[in-house]
Length: 238
Image (cartoon, rainbow, N blue to C red):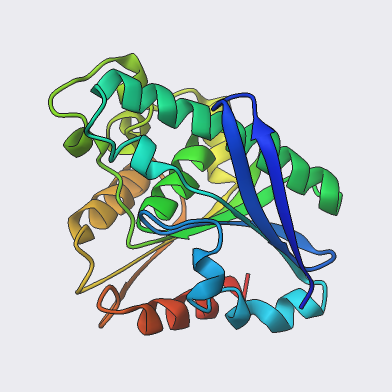
């Protein structure tokens, strides 16, 4: 399996940014790390190896960007406003540096996003905000209520990055139609600490008549072996 390491300076976050890329060609899949994970975490946990058949056959090409959640939502040494600004800088790095590169690299117009925990949040939040860039999103054991990380602070930027709040109020039919054109898979389980958030986001999508797959899997959330098995089942069959 071909693997490439990328490192560049992010003008948006004012720091070096790292990413691993697997494969030569195929559908571009962005795999976000789990909470506090790094760009190599999905590889180390065996998630990428579980897709090696699809990667080696050029069905998919996988991009594993770094995560800086310890400098955004989980950085309690800075103000909530700064956390949100850091999150927005990370989001722009993903949009401009990772997704645009993956589209160019594979000659595809859109990408697939997926991830566990905070990686699931990035997958859905970016899909909802930039539906012109994404055609499918997989969200496993996701964290979707950002208010729990900003200690009572709330402004427009917090609102527009909290999908449990802003998605119910999306009413522009042109915008909603783009979202409805995407395929969403939301997966949770009995050991998911944020099970209720996955249920809530699924309810919201139902209310907005946004088609999606919702799966509840016994044992999911207990260990990475089960997580890897579920990840392989869904992502390898896209």
